[in-house]
Length: 104
Image 1 (cartoon, rainbow, N blue to C red):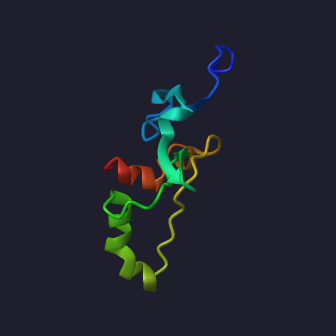
Image 2 (image 1 turned 180 degrees about the vertical axis):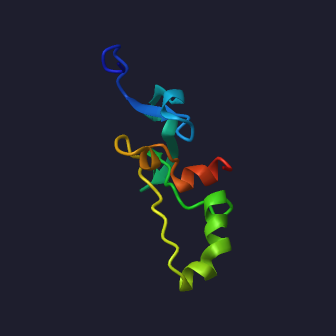
């Protein structure tokens, strides 16, 4: 629909991913909203900011709290990606990282 209505320079996005699929909200976001100005080779350039691990974020704090246990035990948990088809025990769960970010 973004292309149909002439919204070039937009990314499609889905909000509310930690809720059931019927509560998801589709939309668009201008690419420029993701841009920051950084000085590169002596000139200001628009760039998408690097996404680094947030050491004070809930997902990292969870990892940090379990690091020693996970170093010696097998505690495997598949962290993503979202599945759109298959059994509900696979498709209807939120990714672990997203659940931690939302405080679930």
